[in-house]
View 1 (tube, helix red, strand yellow):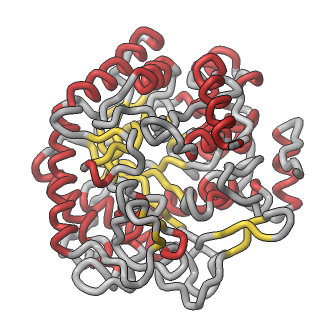
View 2 (spheres, rainbow, N blue to C red; view 1 turned 120 degrees about the horizontal axis):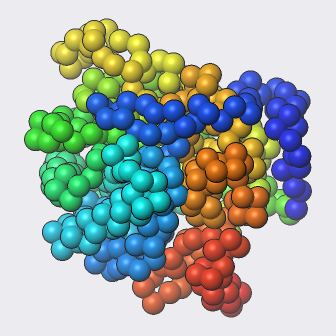
Length: 491
């Protein structure tokens, strides 16, 4: 397999970006900007580093955090990042992506509260103060990817043939029922109930998740859905608008965030002897790809994502996290990697192109979302709206040079925060490492070999799902799990 990452210095990365014709790869050796505080929703956050929502798939069957979940959040808390974006936590049992996903309900609330409290305590012990720590939870409905059975918001002619109903073993087709408008109204109530619990257990913020083609993300693209939740952008954002405005009314002190897809692209599959990714067969214009040029899936069209970001700000969202793609159908868009996951394909593009796409789109949103918009179709005048901080994603593939790229983007105003996902599993104390030494610990830098994803994709386990972490750099805990999962896959 070809190796893409051959850089010795930050300048090597920039030179390769220029060779590839990329415009948003920059590096800065002055990391001080990453340790400057910033105000978010009336609170001071102590630095510009965010831990992205990283699922461990290590909860109990009832949705409670388990031993490895508690361990992970203690490690995150002590690691020095001042924005910890808690992982995807389902609002209902049938909304869970896997049988070990966290699920916030009356029976799990106390355990999740302890998980958050342990994270804060670890932060105080390690960093001296948690008053400038922002700690939240991502509330999710998995929709199409719900593990019990797919719960579709719309039919996607490219994604449907790849979507299997595990209860029947059959793939989805045009006859498969969609969630009704009444179903979506009930889901709205479930979001509100989960938000009430999140506020009670001490979340600083909640993320209403709209990325990676889970339910709210799929609704954003549901141009072909009939009724009041499909067609126009106003209709496609009806559910998230109702959820946010109801939460704001009931819990005015709770900060609301949203991680959303700004570009879906389309599904890929491996082809040829080398199993390089190529687009799945599709017809034009594309009907169900948010933020995507309907006549060319390789091109983003940010018209609707920009409008969505402006509306989210109007409705009261104070923090936005930008993502792209679908981890099941086009993982090279979500997380550029050196090696594909076990169920994936080899990258059809140089990973630096994917990194640049993340940086460029986040920069466009950061530059726009602070500008006051005109009268909205919902009747509210937005003349005095404040700037909403953007968290940028897609950094991990840059490996040793993440800090320099982060500093460049923040200093250039292309993002307010930089989020790391996979890199936090291998080196959860990366922020402390940077503060103490000015560099990452090279022996624990994530090399994007997809071990964590491969563990996550292994379902042959008594609980239906292997816990995921970093087998190469957290060997004591995840090494034995990796060997066990490998043996099962080999069979």
